[in-house]
Image (tube, rainbow, N blue to C red; front, side, top):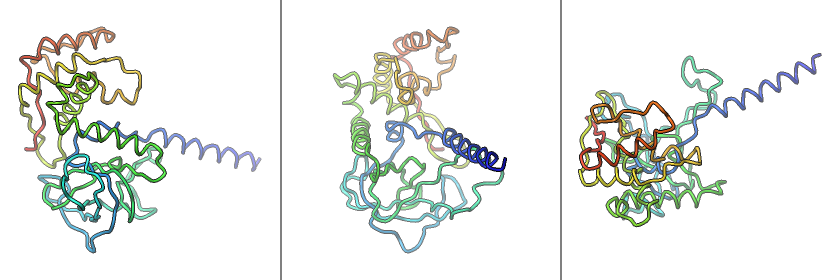
Length: 285
């Protein structure tokens, strides 16, 4: 009887672990990590500042946190951080083992640890410029793409490199003869414009983007292939980007009652409004 109970307990623990694994939110696909970044670098951590830096965590905030500052030797700058050999990257050190992770936290939900850097670590980093300090920050747990024990590292860096190039030269990307490049450029720009910047206090404002670029983005989405076969890639699909536009009835958008006609009706809207609608981007208040 005791052996059976122990066996059942073991199965329960395994089931709990599996459930926790399943409930952990998967990181965004590479294009959605590239889109909001101020800088993306491939490099190696060569050291740390002797003292942490007390700085606000969000623009407009007043409470400060202590950032540990890592020196990262830049081997390749995919986006931003051009012509620099070393950059300063701030991150919040992880809590010590066994430390509570929030009052009332449910044990069945696996909460990602904050991003962490270690000496000699080789990685691709997706960075935001700190609003006040002279350093970049790692905002999300998935902003560190480790090289060690990652057989997909070179492939993922290659994808980030392609996205970063299109984002840095959006006019060329939107005019490309390659439809996939036009679609990806449009998706990157929509994701960048329609992702609210981190901010404490007032909600972000909105302002229209350049009319010619807005027109090119809408046309690229209208011409794209909306048939998504990979559930993971659906995050950055034309339909997902269309939904991010935040359209309302005032914009002439009325979702079809038949969900099966969504792509058809959305494409019709894009073609009909490409000349007149202006995509709006979030800006910090």
